[in-house]
Length: 78
Image 1 (tube, one colour):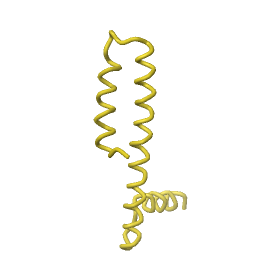
Image 2 (cartoon, rainbow, N blue to C red):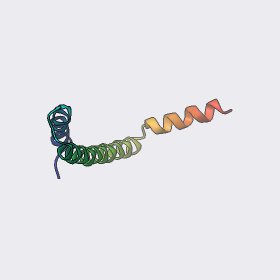
Image 3 (tube, rainbow, N blue to C red):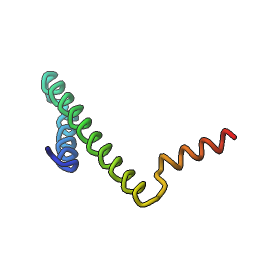
């Protein structure tokens, strides 16, 4: 599986292609679709890393950002 950085570089290439005014509609759709797929892969990678960080913070007894946000919401509703 490609890394986040590799996917991001491919996305940047696709963006340049999409900005080209001389590209065919078929190529636009193909590149746009590939861009969506790469975006999802990047999101999935980031989501997985976020879970790992949250797990490690929990293991270390540290408060996660989500825990902090939930606490703030609770306190605001008191």
